[in-house]
Amino acid sequence: MVEKNYLQKLKEAVKYIESRLDGLRPAYGLILGSGLGDLAEQVEKPVNIPYGEIPHFPQSTVAGHAGRLVAGKLEGKPVIVMQGRFHYYEGYSLKSVVFPVYAMKLLGVGGLVITNAAGGMNRAFRPGDLMLISDHLNMTGGNPLVGPNIEELGERFPDMSEVYSREYRQLAHRVASSLLLENGQPLALREGVYCGISGPSYCTPAELTMLARLGGDAVGMSTVAEAIAARHAGLKVLGISCITDMAIGEELKPLTHEQVVAVAERTKPVFAALVKAFLREL
Image 1 (cartoon, rainbow, N blue to C red):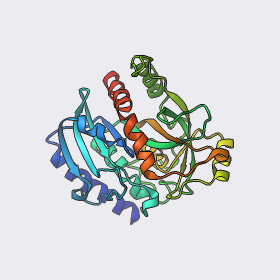
Image 2: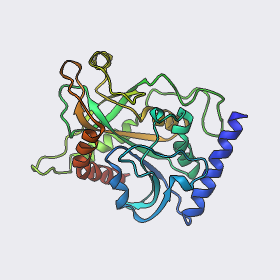
Image 3: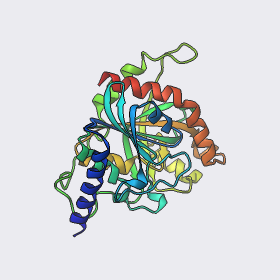
């Protein structure tokens, strides 16, 4: 019963979204995290669909998240953009968090760019860096695939040996090398392992030390469930973290969400240039 209800709700949501797209069939999806949502404003001939209008869609409650889908063309590619996402810590189940990912799958999306704001645990990182996610540690305590499997969406035991597409990462590095920063230097992307925690509290110093020792390079409260669902659905994934602060256990300083958004805001031009160049070369 749960399986049928979830799939039925997905189809109802997709039917409504399609009714608003005027024949546009998006090939790529983007999920924009805290402070990074302005990229959606650059979509050409946009169709804006507030989440509240879409049947069965959750509602975004976090500051810095606009809460709508934006569909149209970006760098000539048909896209559908989540301007704001949903989080486990908001009280949603992980199946609700990934509901839009499966909706994208049914809309015809084949590639997904997932972005987030994250704390840097790698001592070589600096606030404002962009990190390509090479892998993740799921420390949320949950998995969106728990429960009856819906064969129409993906197989029961999906492979996770390459959650974040190596091909996409190589392309991102290649296009980044052609992008010049204000100092005239090419954009140098970081790459590392993202640790997904449930939140909403930030990590303690001991927790950050543990995660770093486990191999984590950055930590945040999103992305992992969405990436798992995307791979379950057969989508190719590029994950990008905007490093907004340093989350090093022995040197931890007090942090607010406003500080995170402020750094993400300053990084927006470089982030937007990277995503647009990546899409242009697909």
